[in-house]
Image 1 (cartoon, helix red, strand yellow):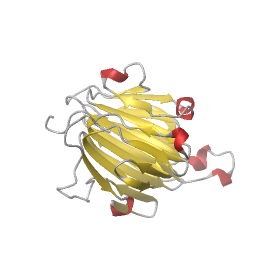
Image 2 (cartoon, rainbow, N blue to C red):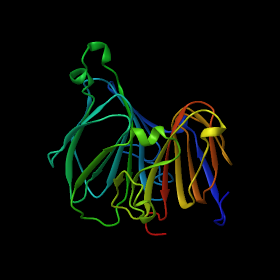
Image 3 (cartoon, rainbow, N blue to C red):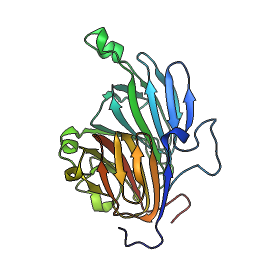
Length: 258
């Protein structure tokens, strides 16, 4: 367990999340988002958004603006077509790490174009993804984009550092973040003790069960969609009951400073 003082663990069940549902979108929000506002649930550490979205084929988010935010999109199944005002145009799929830095301002769209991309109609499927926003070190940065295929690294087990601005992960990070206090790790866990992992120690941790079911030391059983917010903690052991995928944000500051 953690050597940090006064650890705090706060469990948030998936079914309690705020929801946006329209004909083409099923979106669940871990924090206040859009018209859903709770003054007691706006962020954790530097993480402001953790949205789990399912978008039907042929549908998606039309061109819209962002500013002064580091945006990570992690696809669980299906494929998502990204286009932005910097000229980037690509398909995001499971195992591809992607970061968009909004900086001084960027326009982008995100569409489930599986019906265009599929070789056969039966391959049409919803796209299921998690989008996460963290605050950059400073406003007014030059907008940017980065992506990298890391499926092989994930298959090796353990926590894989997907995106980071922390110097300690400089040689292990797939893509960079303009946030020197934040890192996103992902683990694809086989069921059983042999694939167990331990959380890093940090001032703030956010653990999200994207798929499956796990047992976490100090939190008990966590199901798909559940999240745990930790402060001044780390070192907890996580074991999967079923094949699972978890997203772990490690943060060493919060909004407004440490």
